[in-house]
Structure formats: structure tokens, C-alpha cells
Image 1 (cartoon, one colour):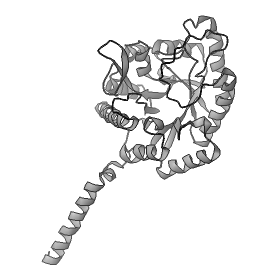
Image 2: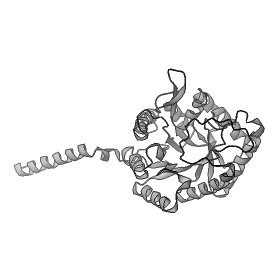
Image 3: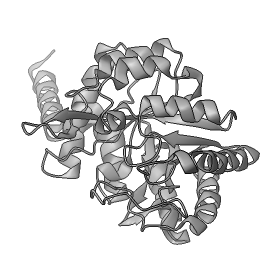
Image 4: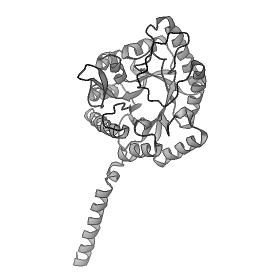
Length: 324
């Protein structure tokens, strides 16, 4: 190599190194490989949908995202122009949608005493809807699932009652009917065990799934929510009771007890749930659907900073489990 060509080579190498230092994001843009559809709920990062998608795709290297709210609205409340814009943004970042994180059935059961205290933990961005509005929310959610090319709609089973027994059969019937409606439209209804709703724990999930025997109702397993309701053995004890073939979605977050003994949210890699073991168990059970980061923890100062910290811990646990 002569002096001129050697000098040119070194200059080019220096420019490449400088460019890498300035734009390290390029080194993280390659999609990560996993047996699961590794995702993040978009509004856990930001209400700015373009920015949230950029973080998921370019910073985290993921190909999947869960849709819940954007631009200060729940997904079901977006107008046609906003929906079109969200489709363009998804295409821009080459992101696929795991499911529609609908607020379906996060409402009071009619005729039951209102026993729920507002904890301020509802993060779905939708105004409180009445029971009469739920059928239209279901119809809207199914339409959105088709539009965003997913076959899953998330739901709950109404705000938790101190004594659900007198209403439990009717609630089951409502879930069954909604699931059958989904089935007729090529969609699966995934019930999240939510700590403020009537199916909150792993054990309660087993009961609900056993009571509603339809292939169109599945479980959105959230062991962190179960811990928040006081089921500290959500994994592995309650997990072992669950019918694995009916788990079609999984939310990833964690919880701990603070110095005062109160249960509070924590990053994914810290808390009661051993996520490396949970990921291994999911893989061994043949699970191939989404594991979606739903941080809820805000110890990082902002939703985005907290999600970045929680993602780092989740990524490490996926790697420890041999799932990334």
C-alpha cells in the first residue's frame, strides 16, 4: 500500500469510527431473535407514537409493538386521520402489532355495589365507559384488530367487587358472548388478569378459564398483576395450575414490597417474579406468542427512562433464559 492510499484508508477508517460514535443507534438496529414476539406497549414509552416506535424498533431492536394509546387518546378513540397516521408510522419502522390493548370491560358491573377505590393506576387513557358502551367498544376493537393485522383483542372482567359471587355467572356469560363474537370475526379475546378486576390472580384465572370453555377466550398472563393483588407465588405455583395452551399473550412487569410493606411496581428484573425462570417455562410450554413490556414502574423519572431501564433488565432475563 503506497503512502497516498494508506493515508486515504486511515482517513476513511477514522470517519467510520467517528460516525459510529456519533450514531451508535445503528449498531442496535438489527432485529433481535427470540422464540417469542418480544414487544413493548407503546404508551409506556411516550404518547408521541412516532417517537415510541423509533425507540422500540431502532433502540431496542424489536419488530413487535402492542397498541394501547397515543397522542393523549386511547386507541379506540382515535379518528380516521390519526389511525391512518399510525399505520404510516408502523410501516416506517417496519413494526407489527401483537394485539389491540383495548379497555374492554374495564367498567362497573350493572346493579353491583361500587366497591372499587380509585388507585390512580389505570393507564389506558380512556375515559370511564359505562356498561352500555361495552358492545360498541368490542365492535371497535375487532375492527381495529383487522385494520392493524392482528387477531387478538385484550379485555378485562369488570372492576373488582368485594363479593363477586352473586354476579360471577353473569360476568362469565358476558365474557363468553364477547369471545364468541370475536371468534365469528377471526379474532381471539385475551383476558388479562388485572389486579383491580375480578380475575386478578393466577388462581382466579384458572377458575375463569375453566368456567368459560371456548377456544375464542384466552389468557393474557400477567404475573406482576397477580403479585399486586397479593398472590406472591404467582410464579411458579399459580403458573403451574394454568392451562398453558390457553395463554396467548403475556405482560412483563414486576413488583416488590417497599420499606413500609406496601407492594409497588419495580423494574422487570427486580421483584417477586423470576422472569428468567418464567421465560424458560413459557418456552418449554411451547409458547410462541408475545411477551410485552408493560413497565408501570416510574422510578426512572419519566415513562421513557423507566421503560429503558426495565427493558435492559427484561433483555438480560430473556438472554439468561436462552430466549434472546
